[in-house]
Image (cartoon, rainbow, N blue to C red; front, top):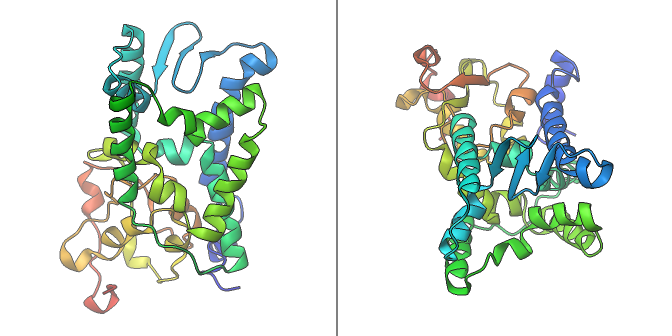
Length: 299
C-alpha cells in the first residue's frame, strides 16, 4: 500500500512508531480515562464523579454541565439550577481556550467508533460513499433546538449516540450494541466520516466555541511539505488544512483556523517532515514562515 492508503508510514519509518502515534495514544488515554471517571461510581463504587455526561459534580465540589444540553433545556422552557449554569460556564471557558471540537477528538467516546471505521476504510481501500454536505450538522443542530421548543423536552437526548452509549455502559448495552454497529457501518460503507464530520449536532455546537480559540495547530514548517498527502488522508476535517499549508502565496498564515478542526493532532503524528505543531493563535512568531513558490501551491 502507498502512504495515502497507509498514512503515517513515512513518519513511522523516520520517527519511530511511538513518536508517530503519541498524540493518538494521548487522545485514547484521555477518552477512556474520562469514561472511566464516569463509570467508576456505578461499576466500582468509587464516586469520583457523581451524575452523568449532561450534568455532574466532581469530588463533591466542581460542577460540570454540558452547555449543549443546557441550551436545549432553555429552548424547552426549563430554567436550570445555579450549579448547572456554573458548570456550563466552566465547560464553555475550557473549550473556548482549547478549541470547541477538542470535545469531539479528545472526550467523545463515539469518536473511537468512527475512528475505527475510518481506519478500516483506509486499510480496505474503500473509495466510494455518499457525500453528505458538511453543513448538514448545523441544520440538525438548529432542529434540536426547534424540537425542544415545540415539545418542551430534550428529545435529542433520547437518541443522542453519546448519551445512549453512556446509559448503555451503566445500565446494560442491550440495543445500544446495534447503535454502535450502525454508526460503525455507516462510516465504513455509507459515508466516510459521515457521523462526526457531517451529521453530529454536538460537533456543530462545539465548533461554534472555536471562533477565537487560542490553541491551534499550525503548519509552522510548511516549506518542508513533500506533498505526501498523509495529513489529508488522516484528518477527519481535511478541508481545514489547505489554507494553512498551501496559502503562503496568498498571505495566509500557517495557523489552522477552521472552526471544525478537532485539534486531534494526527497531522502532527503522521507528518514525517514535522510540518505541524501546536501553537498559540496570537503568537506572532508563528507568522515567521518561509513563503512557498507559486509552483508549490495547490490550485
